[in-house]
Image 1 (cartoon, rainbow over the protein chains, first blue to last red):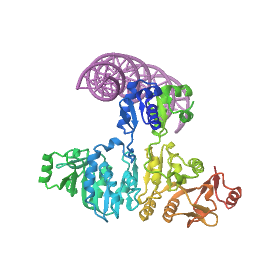
Image 2 (image 1 turned 90 degrees about the horizontal axis):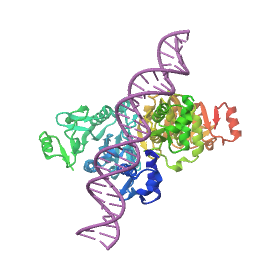
Image 3 (image 1 turned 90 degrees about the vertical axis):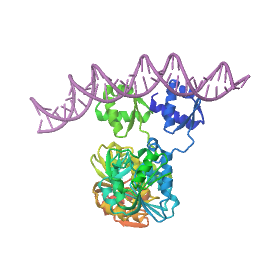
Image 4 (image 1 turned 135 degrees about the vertical axis):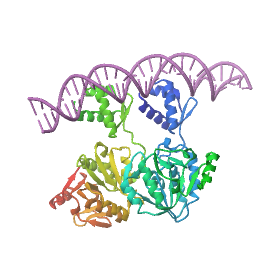
Length: 253
Length: 253
DNA sequence: GCAAATATAATCATATACAATCAATTTTAC
DNA sequence: GTAAAATTGATTGTATATGATTATATTTGC
């Protein structure tokens, strides 16, 4: 039995019983116990089960199947905290842009508290998250589907964005630097982000501290674009001071 | 054994077993293992299976970002059969419209077999279904999200549709009648469907027999709109004859 | 709290699968 | 009928998966 099927077997066994021993897996799969151990480690890192001494138990926490792979969601807590701060900047009756980054995504789950809000986005996970809350009006910008980014891009998307106008834009970045400005991993992602920022009255950059004073391959704007930078408390004080001295409006969790 | 037949054999074997080794394919197909490897690589890129070390497993449907509630999917088998018939009308390199009905939705899962296909839709479940298959190009028409229909509507959507042009449109209807034409449960759904039909060279109406000679509350077009009506074999022969005598191009499963 | 039993992790060795390159064959096009 | 293209197969080096062994950590019984 090879790896893929073995993983399925392990998951299936865990769906039937609340706890399964290594030995049980070994006999079911006809492999050595070290191999099972390795499989369990892998599956645990994917959030599909929890290892115990002697075996494994099913993962009780609901797997958040909103669309991003779990490895795309590292720094989850920092990102959540940043978004808790960001949501306090939103007011009733606002129209907001949300771009398609993973940081901004966490903002979506905090939006249903508003009674009247309009969200404009090109991100499918954001739409998915807001779907159960019909009182939040969602406008999805169309375009060509990028299956890996789970969002819509292309000239059509760019054109459409210019037709909408928002009070506030919440955007992400792969890198932020005083000298180099904002950078992104994807050219087309950058294009959408830039258009959103230009069409909004206020621009908020949501960005965990690991990305500050880093640069990614595509530079698309100076820091002038943003009105406020929101990051987490892990940011080194020296960098924080430097940003403040350059008159960057920066707040931390 | 020729390539096409070999691919079918590979798919068939994987429908019967959860895991098939390279060696098994080799003996079944009487070709070298490198050839099998090449076939598997190709089929994997088409989203029809998943390669493993030593062989392949059937493609596991990954968790869906969006989907219909299962109770919205009654007449599942009829609809699937209708779509199997419909897919035979699609050719390589086509650009097709798909509207947001549940019947048309079943067509999505049959599309990854095409190497080069462009799909234009306003339906989120269709997008979700095609997400794991990046080789199918998807253009999502933007607009205002309707959370119950899981699709996008509104003036923006209508305007955008006029900018795209497709070879074939696959549409649904809540009711079809010789005298009253096509009808829908939702005004805005009808608007999108109509625009798609007008912008396509050929229009195919996918519609299970329970909806034939029924009407729903919003009538939006005569039957002239469609080039072919595809329904299931449960349709009463008397109605079938009547449609044929009126020169409606109708085929059944 | 300590020791025995067991589970786990780390390192290494080996077998197997895989990809890349090139050669041979078949098919297709003109 | 010949050239070009596509398909298939053989060979070699590389990558991956698995298992054995040894050392470390954790649990359990007293």
